[in-house]
Image 1 (cartoon, rainbow, N blue to C red):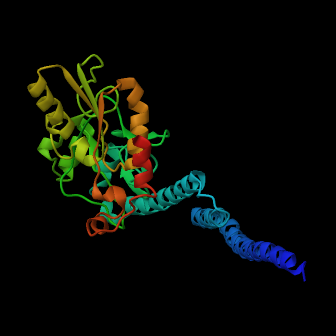
Image 2: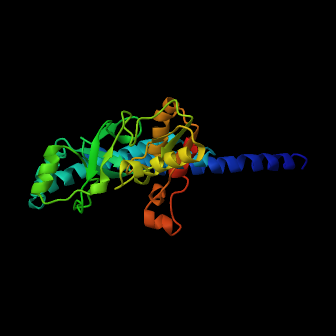
Image 3: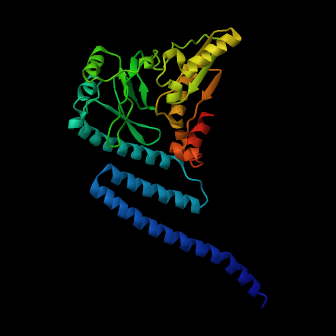
Length: 319
């Protein structure tokens, strides 16, 4: 009888670990089976959707296993899933845009699009606001592979057209280069230009005057179309208004670097700060956020939204 308590204690120590081991074994077998099935589908299909589904299931597997053994989920898997989701969106948008461009409905606009560099073989398709794809003029924007996806071209003058949108769920910023061939094509198509919407970029590819590295006060603004200054003149953008007000208040030279780009999200704000922070050496940084930085704009305004997983993560990185 003296040995029984010892045996009981040993059984109490061993059985829970064996049960946990069995649970983990069942989890692994089930997850491996599901992963294998989706992998097979992805390999057979050979499509961007198949690849994304495969990686999504793999990431789901990794997250659940890490959670079971007490580790927080890693960032690498999430970044890979976003990259694949964005690549899938660009691939699908490219097909839809080509169909639109060749359709009868695009007949009047085709010369404008060609003059703007937006024919299917040269148009710029990039991701914006996490995972939607935008159709851009490569004569106003250029690709960016450092994390921002796209950026305004330096030393470029452009304007917005009036009352136009694309069908079939296509999203475009009809922000076109201010060159004679585009103006002529717009005249032929009877399409107007928003007169106050002309904007120019400086040699850094940011809207506004050249940055003054010797200014007494230097600030850097991160944001989207609201900071870029949609539909307003160069001297009426929020960063330029801020620069003017600070100069009037303090009577010292002020330079505000406007890194705002239409369609940007906190991830792109972060990479903008990485690019310009050390170069400009601002004394303060303004982060302008919009409801759609945290998910669907209307859903966010009613209390829903992704406050932590993506937007919150990138805002923390900025801080």
